[in-house]
Picture: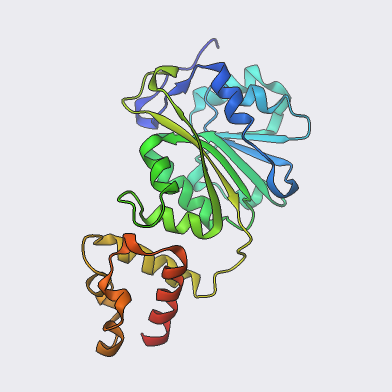
Length: 259
């Protein structure tokens, strides 16, 4: 098999610039001494070829596209059973790795947010993520409080990871060429093992707060039926984008105490 045809329904845009591929792989730090690396959506192995040059990495690749899997099996036979034909979003990652592992990949635009939510679910065993995603999404994830692009993923990821916007990638280095620019970001797990609040409720508060981001938190969080005297506190006059991660933790504690 000489090549893989990009499939629109899978959001495939194959990176064809070798220098950028190498630069992406070079962003991996193997945070906390991790050895296992999982590449999501390897396609024709533009990143894989550089990952396997590192003997200290134990590289595994997962792709939903059977054509890509056949190509990888032909061109990277040394990976053997570590070429996995599966949907990453539906894969039980605990069955693949005995411990912690880093994630790398050129994430399909259409599922990048879902990938990050899965990373959050696995945050105790995923100390590092290096990925190329749509520039707009990368900026959103890295955005500080007060920014118009600051949103749900910004807060949830920043609660558990240090976000580092590494570099922007032109649309001209892909086949087929996407309509937007891309960017590479790196997520490194911070020292927060557990938030000082109910984490499930924290996720709920953040999602509800941004669900109606133009409204004040007093309106966004109405479903919690908080007592009127609690709703007079200044935080409820703010909008979601004005709150830092620590503010959301304090808000979650307040909700827990009064609902």
